[in-house]
Image (tube, rainbow, N blue to C red; front, side, top):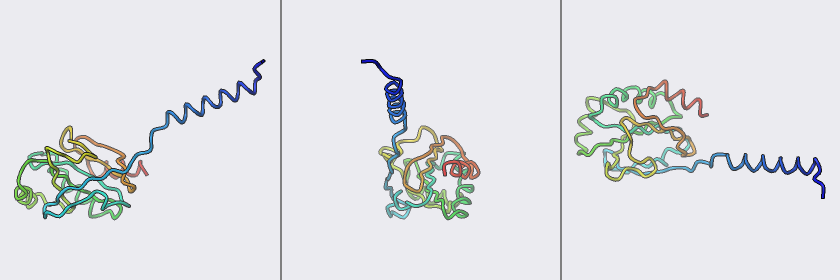
Length: 161
């Protein structure tokens, strides 16, 4: 049976469509985790659904982390559509974090990440600071390793919208 041009066209079209579907990235799944805040109350990432969340792993001994705190606080305070959530990643007592935050005040909520069992949704940071951008649907859309500024974060969020 002879192959017609239409048959060849149909086969090519189906192949292109199948290749396109197979090469499309899978839809991101919402992530969530719960960690204790400095006051002992649990903080869940899902508490912030509907807004952008900037999750920032930091430690008291990390100089770039300390430098980020004022910028992250300013963004958190100025933007109703963005929440910053600090994840203290250090094996120390809550009192050490509270004393540290007297000298480096953060206006955003701080949760404590267990260094031996970090939130599975994020894993252990490869370096500090590490910042994750989570979209209003709860999907992790960007990871930034190393220091970051408010301007860089706002630009990244604008690019993702």
